[in-house]
Image (cartoon, rainbow, N blue to C red):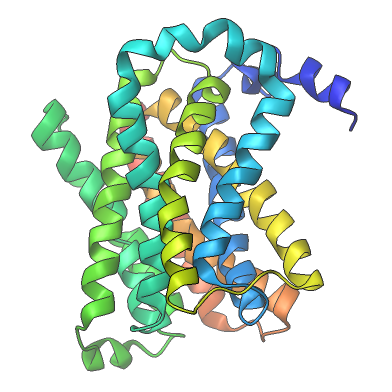
Length: 315
């Protein structure tokens, strides 16, 4: 797709309206896309080991996202950035904490805890979002929603434990788990704050957030360099870096913003639990891991949990 065509596609204030005029259906498409792209990120993270250093990934992914968004929507950003002028402090905080620090804590946590722990802890994000909505916005939480959340988290536990649920009784808490829990709290706070910008173009909002994330990530990479952990990308690393920039850093964030705008952070948060399921399935397709029965069970539980909560919300 040429740059001129890309600009034409994204020229509208709400570019994803072209998909469907139904906000709920549009949200489902966007949030499923988000989960798929974040699932890809888990695979890319595995492939990036030995190809480049982790903090450099954080900086380059947000630099790449800024370049993409400016190339596609430069005129719109220049024209409409004043709409966000009074919100600069909040947006800088959202981009820095929800994007850059979350990513950094995720990579650091992965060095001191297990993939099982990481998967289960990430499943807490929808819980944090629902509780935050209740405490901050007085958004009611129904029994059906709670049931849906439990089902989706059960799906995460099934896939994270590789179907051996007795492994859950053997879990131990360590420093990485605390860091990952804090990271999930940060992302839940970011998701809840998106509610205040429901009428703003996802492209414009993302441009500011990505720029804040890039600036906030620079000290992390400098520290990595100073401590001897810096590794410039290899040729293969640059290919992986391009995919990380395009899918989890660019496409996923825009579709997540649109999805939250359409159905709210509480409902959108449930789709986060599709991430470990997609990651496992993609690992089968890309990394060559075997497809197991628990992948299917996990996907069924997560999808049924989302469908249950959504059916109650629409009724």
